[in-house]
Image (tube, rainbow, N blue to C red; front, side):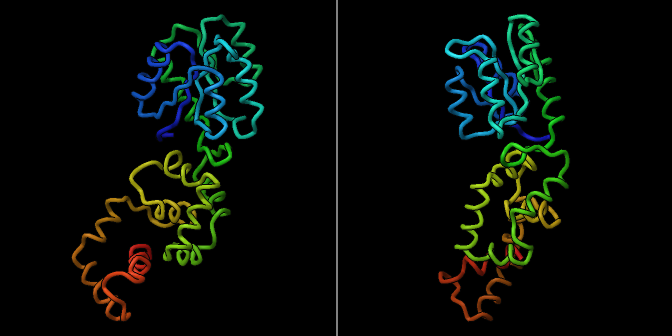
Length: 249
């Protein structure tokens, strides 16, 4: 996928957890650690990781039972799971029957683990809110367009602070802000530009390119002239909205 993924590592051995964190974070991914099934389930009640590395032999609840609990949740049903254990191939077969994507026997090299993780992430495509995965940005665009108003209405909502906040709260509640900023097109982009690029086909500007518009002396001059022509004060009042209308045309 060429993007940063959030990986959940579940293992009761602190030494192995640390080792897995070092190996996987070295590939640029965000690694969340859980010391057992209870901590993992608490995390998974609120979050949808991009991939789970799961030890089989753990106290309280073993990894196979935890895997069954994970697959029973619709939102988590397609999250790739790598089973990680020294228990033998028979456990691997049981894991696959429960929905595991891959079984790795200990000991495993860091290189093999990274290859397994990257292979599953590349295969899975783009993770959307709610746990759905799609293979292309075109499919992402179609889903996002359903969550946004038509283009003109979107621009009008964004220019005013109250409606922009309401729009962002709605997108955050649906999981779109995290999906866009972290999973789908991670990088130095303004959310407005990401939304416009994916939903309406606008050119994608980096934050640096967006900021350069403000730093350009011509922008300050144009802003002064614009506010005078509108009869608006140069400070306060509706300045935020007026700036938004210029920065986000």
